[in-house]
Length: 136
Image 1: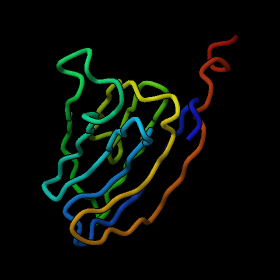
Image 2: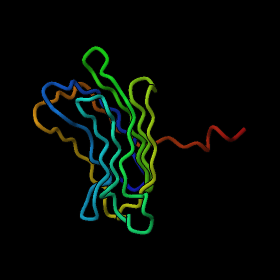
Image 3: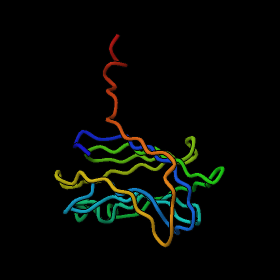
Image 4: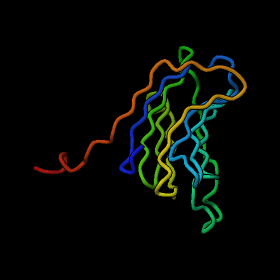
């Protein structure tokens, strides 16, 4: 992932995994985890996201509820230099957080805990510019 950011869209079939998702802005300085668990929670974990010591509430986990529909969990994540915004399903759940990763932390990976998960779709692209929409 370049420092400019990425849009990452995924469709998962949970299978037997107790948890699965994405690790974004990963590197030696930490990672931010966009996960899903068997209870239908979609946690955004920034406890190891980089610089977290300057504010007590920063290294937290924030989550929303998201149920699988037709045995699929669909998310779209917008990740840039200092924020991640996750839309679950068709916008049923939205979780947004700021974080302060090391500038060299640009990795992205998928993970599954305690079983299998099937990736049915995965796309990634750079974010579009808002400036063209603002010009008249």
